[in-house]
Amino acid sequence: MLDYRDAEFCLKAVGEETRLQIISYLTIDTFCVCELVELLEMSQPSISQHLKRLKEAEIILEERRGKWVFYSLNKEHTLYTFFLHLVSVLPALKGNVNNLVVEGKRVLCE
Image 1 (cartoon, rainbow, N blue to C red):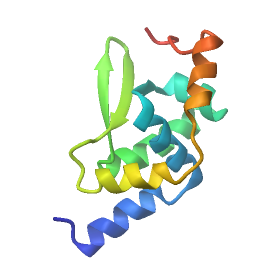
Image 2 (image 1 turned 45 degrees about the vertical axis):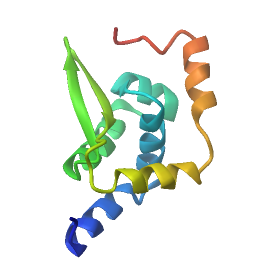
Image 3 (image 1 turned 90 degrees about the vertical axis):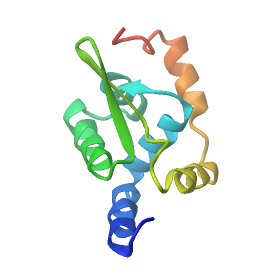
Image 4 (image 1 turned 135 degrees about the vertical axis):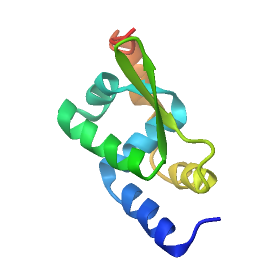
């Protein structure tokens, strides 16, 4: 169970537009930083800082695959279903992922 301080920490972590978009993308699939750079049209250091904040709140997980790191939502997080509901009321981003595939940028890190 979450206490009020932990809930505040998590809500502050997701209380920013870019981090909400990252969470939205991670409900669709697992992504590496370079793919998120393309999707969000931001610099790699900026995306990494947002990922760090989400990771500190244990909202996302990272998995090493060779020299690449892939990010996914932490399905064991106490607020996981809350995050899914939150994303469900935000604009859908699946089309952006489909465009990434069409442009051949979905597999940059494989």
